[in-house]
Image 1 (cartoon, rainbow, N blue to C red):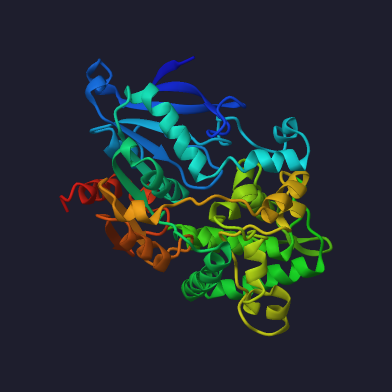
Image 2 (cartoon, rainbow, N blue to C red):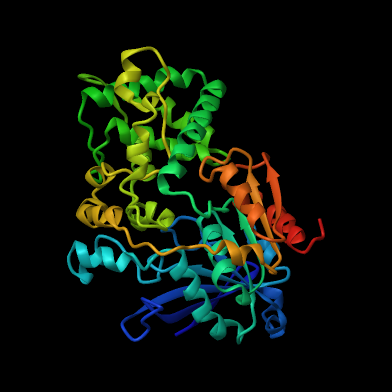
Amino acid sequence: MTATYRQPGVVLTDRHFTVPLDHDDPAWETIELFAREVVASDRADGTQQNLPWLVYLQGGPGFGANRFVGRSSWLDRALKEYRVLLLDQRGTGHSTPANRQTLPLRGGPTQQADYLAHFRADAIVRDCEAIRPQVTGGAPWTVLGQSFGGFCTVNYLSSAPEGLTAAVIAGGLPSLDAHADEVYRAAYPRIERKVTAHYARYPQDVERARRIADHLLTHEVTLQNGYRLTVEAFQSLGIVLGGGEGSHRLHYLLEDAFVRAPHGPVLSDAFQEEVQGLLSYASHPLYALVHEAIYGQDERPTAWAAERVRAEFPQFDAAKTLAGDSPLLFTGESVHPWMFDCDPALRPLRETAELLAARTDWPPLYDPARLAANEVPVAAAVYHDDMYVDTAHALETARTIRGLRTWVTDEFEHDGVRAGGPRVLDRLLALARDEA
């Protein structure tokens, strides 16, 4: 079933596909995928049939493709020469969503964990290859991978390069062999640098953050949706610091934290409402469930790597910080077991998450030998001191992929392809074509 409709400057077509849950056992079970085709309105008169295709792989894991209105952000540049397919990766958006409401259909936690083991980059790429003949008639397409979408793109180059005419990656070059422990061991110092930079910009936030943390250590706070706001949850708001406007956003949040009530200062409703929106996984639970699994490639379990490695960095311990006079450190880009206690959208899935964290049979995601022989034009934006993806890991991978051209920049943070829009995509396409 398809539906075609218009927005300013574009014609949209909703498309649905059926693919195997397990591509190695296609007779077992199928799931449904959703993707939105976008064409510039001035090319929707039949001439779009001559345009090449660009498929967009969203960051995450666990987020559906962008719901653009018209030709906003990088889409404006893409539509000048492509038909664009915005794919909701399996488990996200309209593509057989995986959440606390739907997963019980699979059975108990064991069945749910076995099911979710099929929701990593390798399966997403095989989905792309399964639907490509229906979309392009068999012709290869260009892929744009943002963040985790870049991880998927490197898997694409490893497993099915014949499906690609070119690949452009924005802030998403993964380590080819780092265990989750190594990923987070590199992450905490980056996060600390981001927090230090934030306090240098907004020194008044040092006392504000300490005051909020102290309040949470001495009071039980439950948000309107049932989320238990602990001090660790408050610290995890540092995830916003990886975006271009994140420091400013955090500053405005902290300055409105308290109001005076009859029994003394309390966290304001406005503060709690915004915090709830930032912390809740209700719209993207798959991010929490399989986040560490995207790094699993050997017989070692991920075993809540971010939580374990955090213990190696005692400066992130809020209680110890408040016993002295140091600034409170925020965290970000990590998933912890306590989130499945705090967040009502995750609580029913705690045992499922534990089983995924203990899993030891993750297959390899990347093929270094094939990447070393790569013939697909590839370009990647590497954001200097990216909070979400380690720059050293990204550059090491860039050196492994034959012919890959990098654009290392400190002009943007991790959300550069959104913030920079047409300019970033234009630069990446030019690099891939060896025109820049």
